[in-house]
Amino acid sequence: MTYEQLSQNIRNKKSFLCVGLDTDLAKIPQHLLKHDDPVFEFNKQIVDSTNKYAVAYKPNVAFYECLGAKGWLSLEKTVHYIKNNYPDIFVIADAKRGDIGNTSKMYAKTFFENLNCDAVTVAPYMGEDSVAPFLSYPGKWVILLALTSNTGANDFQYTLSFENTRLFEKVLKTSKEWGNENNMMFVVGATKAEMLEKIRQIVPGHFILVPGVGAQGGSLEDVAKYGMNSSCGLLVNSSRDIIYADNSEKFAERAGEKAIQIQLEMERLLREKIGNR
Image 1: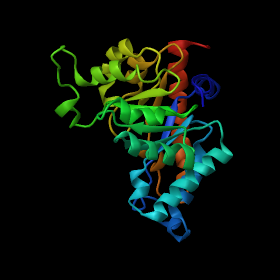
Image 2: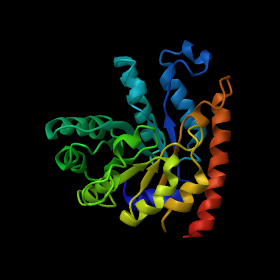
Image 3: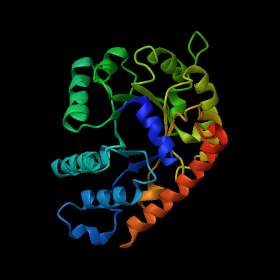
């Protein structure tokens, strides 16, 4: 998917919502456990109820890998279902991979060839050669971790170098030379929304994936205020607030209602910030 295709879908849906599929067997409605693949059934119903309001889905790979081979099969079925039924949707494998080149090459093959995801989250710590294999796939995206919202982010990400540059700024300045606006995005946690203003000075045109809105306390209003550019340039993720909005047999319906609430807020912010472009 190209930058323009993703931007057009944002304009069409008046939404920059990404729904996180952090599907936990312990949290899904109990009546789904009768299905042969309850994880996939849950995901399928969530996707069917929210796809009109979302431009992206982000399955968190850890929630599937912990279930072994069966969990991986649920992930495969989920991605294929989205791709086959809603081809305009951007699919992100939230895998946070990052290793030496040969290993990264295999990770890239996993998520881009076998699963056919549009993007994968990647850790930058091992440098350019660990990221380059992901960037070798035309039409696919690397989403590089830049500034996260967890408490431990303070351990390293704000560390000043001898150049008086914080580590997350160094990541942005260096890595934007590896790819471009058409194949690289960055992760910035919503609870760090005020930092988006500085980040936009470094990467004004890139898409930014913003987790942490909703249950984690991030403000959608602040994210748009500091992070939106002239073409939107944002994918804001909401997971628990949507997929676990209800635990009854009406869980999918409630998820759809929650998604449209967020979409309507996003429509207002888009109108205020960039008008009818």
